[in-house]
Length: 218
Ligand code: SAM
Image 1: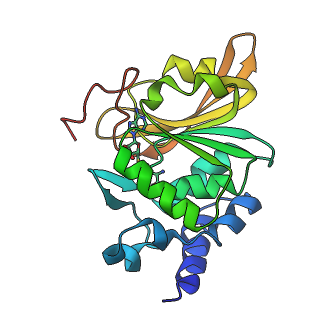
Image 2 (image 1 turned 45 degrees about the horizontal axis):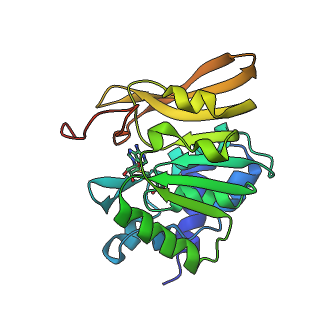
Image 3 (image 1 turned 90 degrees about the vertical axis):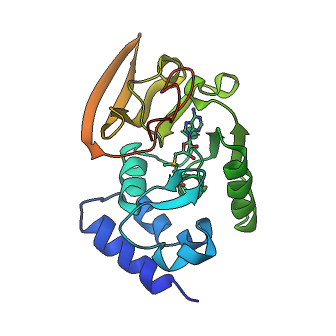
């Protein structure tokens, strides 16, 4: 099945027409085969305007959200990026084409394994995936020029601020269990940060030491 027409339509109608202007992000999303990151029975819906289930009560994020969060990092190409919540690996694949290296953490081992398999199939070789609690970041590899968190948290885990390079940007959903606000935090240096609110959003919970304690409410 050739999904290239559906993919082009997704990018045009859901991403460009809604105001995402970063050409590198647009070009990459025109090339990544999103249907390979969902199970066979859902491939026909992969280019729709929605998140989709990927098992384990988790989701692959809506294309517009992937594009908006990626664009908000204002990537130039030589960055080392931390991603929290590998999920299907789709957002990871998008990031991998826009930066030097992606460090991605997923707490559910079966999802991390499946993501790794798809990324290998696509010959993506600049991604390190770790299984564990991403709310504490990845200290050994810090500082990062960007941190993208694809799960919602009551507030910003302090470790992310510690692991952000000067000039670096953190993009993540913050708020309640049902809905959150997508925020961007820029590290200004000398312990100073600028915090911006980007848009309303709805993500699965970030579960761990510095996030929600469980997903029993989900
Ligand atoms: N961006 C992903 C994609 O394109 O498929 C979707 C990510 S999904 C919305 C959120 C992911 O965050 C889930 O796979 C979930 O298991 C993971 N997650 C939640 N809490 C986490 C934590 N503390 N550390 C790492 N991953 C976590």
